[in-house]
Image (cartoon, rainbow, N blue to C red):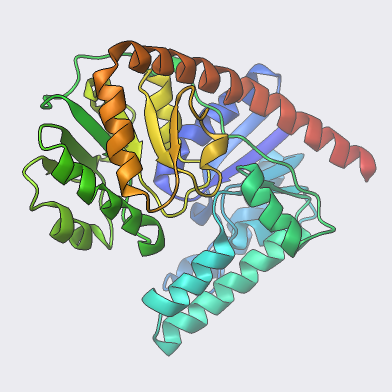
Length: 357
């Protein structure tokens, strides 16, 4: 069995490599490639690559001869797999339809960019409709996919974690007690929930809040929160230093917080639990599937600033409960988000799809 795995963003390489290694242990030969190294779809400024891309993809497929192709974004690479009549499995990490709506309203108002967005959306829709199976990363997202494609094959694909990467280190130099946040600020609908912490920052002046992240709306967040002496912005953590930088940060914090207006399967929430930290998170999207409410931490309803103050105070006053929740979270993530389990489940899906043909 041979599986070709194509990744898009560089920050996804690390985890898809772990998936590939899990497949390899099960006797599968895999090849991990960056999608745009082989296929550049229209529209593109790289005209030469656009002309050559079809030839490069054909050569890749001929030489490797995959039994299936697994892609982590919906672009021309997936379309070429469909044209080649190779079973295509599409990993879906986000609510792409909401993201397109938001992009049209806020980011892409010019006619040229809107046209490019239209082409990319059409490409994504073809990947979904003609794929062998769509693999949403949580049940919440799968339900959305089923509404749009009621007759299409779908299955939840829980991305695994490798516990061996997540162990206590010397950590970074932070002031205590402290709460840590690891999240970017690219979508206001998601990012604005961070402002719910204003009440906690004011009510708990001796508690330090450390935010690592960046994005289009970082300035807007900083304008609101940086006036508090106990709020500290650490900037972006470079992906080339991952997971070391994230591990050092999580080693040092007392509580992990994820105030978010929308999230599906936040990686940082799983990382924090593997590091045996109690977690607090907004109860939106698929977040409740990534933790155990009242066992590994607490879910908080969107916009409830008072509850953030209450739960942070409670956890900081109860060290034993923090430890109990940390241990429970580590056990939960280790058992639930396991690459070996994810790889075995994927192979079962692949076998069933091939058998039906």
